[in-house]
Image (tube, helix red, strand yellow):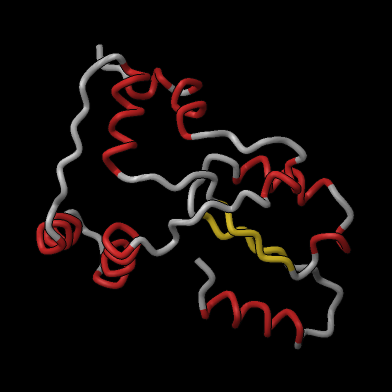
Length: 145
């Protein structure tokens, strides 16, 4: 999700006379972001200078996400849609500020930031990891004792 703040950062970088480089990793999903950062930091600065890489490997519904959790964890997981009002109240009552919750509503309910960035495979020089692969690798984080 490209934002006005990224425009401002790019403008600041362009108007600064010192020898600095700028790369922005804009996550839509975090599964491949650390490997992308490693590649960008390991390669010549000139290759990635002033680039913005959106990171989002897969796009699927919350119902599909529940199916994947069910398959990998071996238990039935059901997705229940929360109302915007309940989502807002729950997050505000947990201490989040209004502007953050408002942006989370855009992501969760409007689908902003939900797009696959298959071109990231070019940077990583490998196919993108899927959510199911990531979940298999991190299954211990979701198992109860």
